[in-house]
Structures are given as structure tokens and as C-alpha cells.
Length: 455
Ligand code: GDP
Image 1 (cartoon, rainbow, N blue to C red):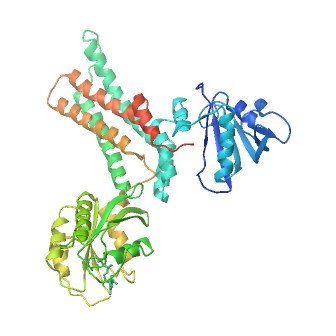
Image 2 (cartoon, protein in one colour):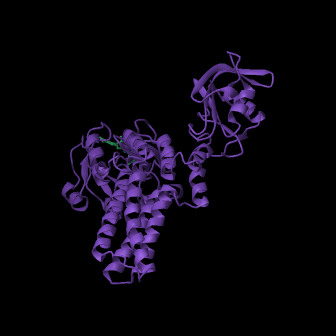
């Protein structure tokens, strides 16, 4: 158990029904006892775990609030340490005042993620599980939440451990064989090794693929709406966000800045930017907007390219078409409520996904949602399978796949077994870094620094 006792507000910094101050550490219950008086008159220091007490919170002689104090005893608590949680009235002032009382009573302010970090250091949760706590808190949709919960429950770690164990099995045999050449140790066959490495590699690749498909429903995909002026980009943006956000006029060049929104379309989250119409202009201010739009277009993962169905395609449209080449893209033929004049067949030649909509009436919105989901392969995401929940986990997986690929190449090219062993060992290290079994202190600190205070 850590020497210091930490305290922090665990609920949002906003008025609410309940505010919770969490205290964890060797002296958590003694600290809580200094500021909390139960109505039954008994000291909570004698309390067993899993008990709730009703009483009042004091700072010295000053009464602050009525509250409920929950007592958890080590190791049966979130952090694995003694924990007291004081639930007072949620309010900007009251909750902060209770925290101050706890600090005056000897606790120190908790750092970001310190409760979960202690849970990790005390073996209550692994590193991948810790990250899923943040993913669960930040989840903005059903699928994202169930994927994070699934990882929190250990499904990812179990799968990664299985992968690591099968490679460890091979490495153990290889090491024994390399280190004791004179002993009568049965040589492991190249085929057996190749089989295990290939199988493990493809399982890890499937996990990475699922994460990539799932980012559309977990983190959201960086997207951009492009199109020449007046095709209806702002109107579409307003349709998708559900309220008037962009200025809609029929004067070309009204949208001069890049407006970003988080849009939830069914299960898909788009971080979407409505950009100034990309076209040549003499106007300096407008030009800045056009440049921003071009940069945004370059780095976007998904492009929604809007065309005006009621007018023929022109050179500006052709420029947009060229910019979309080779990118994940949905073409939108807007203004379907007006007679069609655009060359739909020509557009179909360039875009495998073409959707007809009327941004003004909302017709075609469901088809657009389906097309976006298809382009992003979002339907291949399975929140019930082992799910990665962070880029850190993804890069550990990618590095394990690369090292296994090297081990396979080495075997196929008849390189010595100790070289194969080195590659396989590195793959194991990457997998153990993912679960945290072999993560450096710097990696652990980096993971928890992204947490919020109080978690
Ligand atoms: P932007 O310059 O691409 O952002 O285009 P706007 O969204 O500002 O729209 C330009 C004009 O087209 C406005 O007068 C809109 O009302 C009109 N408009 C947009 N979408 C539709 C649509 O689906 N049908 C019709 N009839 N007009 C539309």
C-alpha cells in the first residue's frame, strides 16, 4: 500500500444531485473519520468494509453538509487500498469544500488517474483494462461503451495472453534447444513453429482490423464535407447536426471558416468539418478559408463530396473529383428535390458510393448513413470480440505482428534458430507491454496522465 493518502472529487465539476469525494490510501479511513461524524455516534475507524454510514461532514468545527460515507477495506476496493467515499450534495461549492476538509485532514490531492494507477500497481486491473476505464467514461455510443466494458472485463487481455503464451511456448523450446545442444531435447519442428507464428500473427491482425473498423463507432472518424460553393454543404451540415450551425445563403463564399462538429449517425461518430467551398477566389479572407479547407481535406479519413444535382458538373466539381481519388469517399448528389441536370453516370465512374439526397428536406439521410458505414467497414466491428481501446495498444499489436513476420521470414529462409528466437522474444515483449505485465514506468505514467482527476 502506498504511504500517501490521496483525495479527489470523483464527480463532474458541475451542479448535480450528488457529489463524491474519494479518499484512498493507508490512512483513508482515519482521514475520513476526522471530517465525518456518523449519526449513530460511532467512529468509522472500527468499520469493516462494504459499509455505508449516514452523517455530517465537518472541517474543524464548521459543519459543511450532510453526507453518506462508504467504507471499503483493502484489498476489496477499487484501488486495492482502504477507501472512503463521501457522497455529499453535488454542487460546485459543497463538493470542493468537502475535498478541502479531506486535504486539511491530511490527504494529498490525487493526480490525474491516480486511483486507477494504484489499482493497476496493486494488481486489481491490468494496463489494457485501465485504459478501457477511460474509454468507457468517454464512450458516446452503445457500441463504444460495450467494447470498452468488454475490455475492462478482461477479454482483450485474455486473448493477448493466449497469443503471448503460444509464442512463449515456442521460445522456451527454442531456448532449451539452443542453450543445451548436447542434451537430448526433442527438436521443435520448423513447421510447428511456422504454424504457431502464422496463426498468432493472423489473430493479432484480426484484432487490429477490428479496431480500425471500430474507430468509426468508438473515437469517431476525421471527416470533411467538400464541394464547390452553393452545392449545399452547409445545409447538409445543418441536417446532420440537427441545428443551424453554418450560415446558409445563396451568395457564393458565405462559409469562410472551418466549423467542426461531432455527429452521431446511428452508431457512427464523425468528427466533421464543414469547409469553405473549394474554388478559386480573389478575396483574401475567403482564400484563407479555402486554404484551411484544402489542408483539412488532405488529412481527413473520410470525404463527403457534395455535388449539385440541379446543375451540370463544372471544372470546380472536376477539381474536387480529382482530389478524392484513392481516398475513402462518399459522393453526395444533393438537391434531389429539383430536376436533375448533373451527369450522374460520370460521377458513378469516379465514386463507388454515390448517394442522392435533398439536404433541405432530409430525404436520403438513411441511405447516406448506410453508405458511410459501408465505406468505413463499420459493420465489421464486433464489440463483443477482443477489442483494443487505445492507439498505444494498437501500436503494441502492430509491433508484435511485425516481429512475428520477421520470425516467419527467418524460418522460411533457413536463418539460425537464435535469430528466430530474438524476433519471437520481441513479439512477446510487445504483447506484455500491451497488457502492462512488462511496461516501463514511463509507459505507465504516460497512460495514466491521460486520465481525469478522481478516476
Ligand atoms: P454551400 O455553399 O455549399 O454551403 O451551400 P448552402 O448550404 O449555403 O446552400 C446553397 C443554396 O442551396 C441555399 O440557398 C440552400 O437553401 C440551397 N439548397 C441546399 N440544399 C438544397 C436542397 O437539397 N434542395 C434545394 N432545392 N436547395 C438546396
